[in-house]
Amino acid sequence: MDKPKSGAAKPAMVKPPAKKAAAKPKPAAPKKTSKKNVAPAPELIELPIVPLKDLVVFPRMILPLFVARQPSVKAIDQALTHDSQVAVVCQRRDSHAYPGTQDLPEVGTLAQLLQTLRMPDGSVKVMVECRTRIKLVRYLKRKPFMVGQFEIIEEPEEPLRPEQEVLVKLMLKQFEHFMQLSHQLFPEAAEQIPAIHDPGPLADMIVSYIAASVEEKQQILEIIDPIARLEAAGRLLSRAMEMATIEQQIHSKLRQSIDKNQKEYFLREKLRAIREELGEEEEAEQREYDVKIRAIPVAEVREKALKELSRLDKMPPVSSEGSVIRNYLDLIVSLPWAPEEPAEMDLKAASALLDKQHYGLHKVKDRILEYLAVRKLTGKAQNTLLCLTGPPGVGKTSLCRSIAEATGRKFERIALGGVGDDSEIRGHRRTYVGALPGRIIQAIQRAGTTNLVILL
Image 1 (cartoon, rainbow, N blue to C red):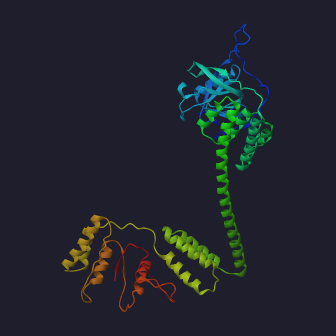
Image 2 (image 1 turned 90 degrees about the vertical axis):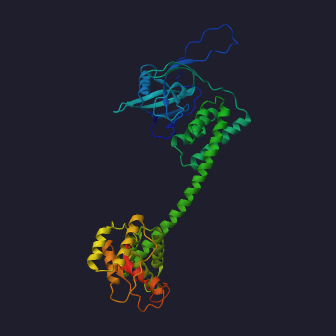
Image 3 (image 1 turned 90 degrees about the horizontal axis):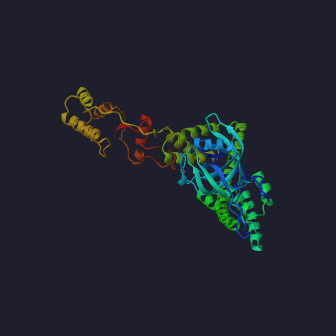
């Protein structure tokens, strides 16, 4: 894959425009003609072709390239044996394979190889200077690498009209503002922007620095008229400025949020230092709460507990409401919140255990085994309860204990004698003095698991 060193289509340097080219390739000698009014034949040159992936290069750009595909490496070697010039074009399809002639556009860029470096894996790192636009006339060779005959495209040089000079100045100001807005003001760009007065080089420089699709950049590369090219680049620049403005607004909001968080962190650290000087141990207690709360896997419970911990942090140590919140947090962190898989149920072992521990009671044991069998077949808990009736001493509690042992669960017994209020079962409100959790929650807390058998 042939790609730029940095990955993005950003030039390492954009060469400032000059009135005369530094070194033009040697064109084929045109045929002499006796008619003075006939236009001269276009300059044709033969160049090896180096396709690029996801990168469109413009004249006056100096940038590094990594050439990894073997046909492109051979094209570089061929160019080094002659005049060190290649034709760089951007392939249409995003593919790792070496493209065919149908995948390459007609307009590309003539590039001069400045430096080459062989890599251990066989690839080549080259520094290229893009000179001018070129247009493919025909392919001369396709294997082992492509060679084509190209026509050098000369930009028309005409004096600018007043409205065109205004357009150039406006594009210069907008481009400078965009570079400052997007925080991408490179030193070389800062030096070259004020020196550019020609619409063609300015359009090429704008497009080379802004983010745009490969298709859009290729379309601008194919525009020969400088004013039309600058107008097309201006449309892309306006869109890029809108995106940069939105991005800056988002960064500003994030920065304000970060500043607020940093302020809170500073104040909390200061408060912690004051508490250490006073010998208070609440900070260690709150850190312990925080660690245990963040280990809770249920997001809703975790958020509620963290909110209560934040309230506790803002309360004075001797607050009566603080003790209520501490009791609440102690209950929250002591409850089992992690989901548990029930143990594998063995009906034969359960039947043997019931027969061993209880003589007779065949109807009761058959109903229990029927309940366990349905639960095993369905694979989920049923919304039914087993109701055992009978006078004291007939074995109701021992049967429940046997069920828990047969299913591999813990057993908890909740005595309801003397209960006169349903709040004792489901729990009191925290606003009441001496409020306690309900009997069922207390049983789960004692058992340390949610997969248990409860006898009411």
